Picture: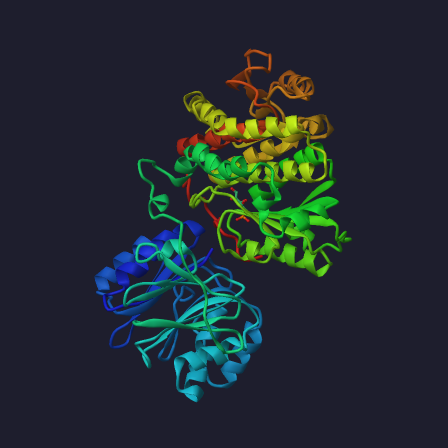
Length: 607
Ligand code: F6R
């Protein structure tokens, strides 16, 4: 969602700020802005793409050695220029990610002090509050420290003032903020991608930290105001991974990166076998206590968890429940402290998943594991154990390589729990490791089906609705397929466990309804075939993703694309690929914005 950049340097920082904002575009936003200090405050804001704001900044000749910038995804107040950040109060300028919960009471108090408001945002409260304390404290750092003590809610902020043009102040609570350390120049950003063009040396701030950045150094203060050192690391995210390269879209690039992303994620498993060490230092002790698994996640990550339920129950013989994080967090759940809480999140920042984890912990769940793609993000930091997928940066809003690598992580968890519980024979372990070893190749074979999938996409493009069917472990793949086509093509799609068809959705089926079926040769194939007959008998057109071992042929109204062979227990990973490709090519045929679908954001950091 929203993104923050900030810089203090001897050079003009406008190009850095705008480059940083462009790299944050993938998170989703609807307006953007920068403010730089020269003799005064030069602020440029625009609704729409960063490129429009960039053009305006160039036209106005914006320049300065210190500045902040922001991409805004509207929450408090509509998508308007006055609501776009940065917000100014006198000589103070602020950008903010997050939500200030006590903004109404602060707004009233500041009005009583004589402040007027130009926007509907909660952020303007912060600008006025810092300005107010700048009068009493006489110093920007102290003013920010005073102001943040009065904020309830979540924030990451960047603040500058013409009163001290040699200083950039940042602070965080509940939202990520990191510092980029350069040579004679320093930066803040909400996401590492926004500093990599300048430096790979980064420092992740902790909850409650306030940081003062000057040309020659950086000082961090903890929530009690005490000076503190935070570890400096070299980011392992490469700039190349953030570029499109030869591809037209990040989603296309990320779909095709899956063999490598999977191989990178599997490498650690092949090196160590199904060992608790894969999940962190304490994992032997934690995983041995586990009597069941509760998975919490949102969206695509929830569907990964839904596949894992089948694996955990089948392989580890442990009960497993999967729940949408935003539901769990408000339910009066009955805790069983012997259950492992598994959160799954590509970004590691999704607010609902984070809050669901905190709620589980408040209920007495002490055993927690995060499966995450972004190092040092909030959810793994709040969990006892972590498995980092090695998908690399995922920029397209629609999750693809994060999903399939999450599946590998979850399969590994199932097998590791099975091994610890004495439920995995040496032969089975060997077979599972071998299946993982073969997986990147099988996924590559599925990618090679792309030329066959394109004509299907052309047939899909004029449709308004679609049904996706699957059974057993492939039912969540049908759900993921329906979500993928909804979010990037805007075709309304629903997924059903195929056995449910006759309990209602069959009424929807006619010649206009394409029905996608995930039908590999698993133990439920015969059942799926019967469900397909039910569709065909009502005139529905079937688009079937099968494998070479699912013995049925094409016929009138039944189109079949086959992966080269059935890959056994990991088949859901392979079958995720064709549904991704179908969505991608249908979106191309419909001319929608593949990487930035309307109304959506990559990291959902609000409720
Ligand atoms: C769909 C998609 C979303 C995310 C969901 C959770 O393609 O990307 O449904 O899966 O917002 O995000 P993370 O995994 O970052 O917690």
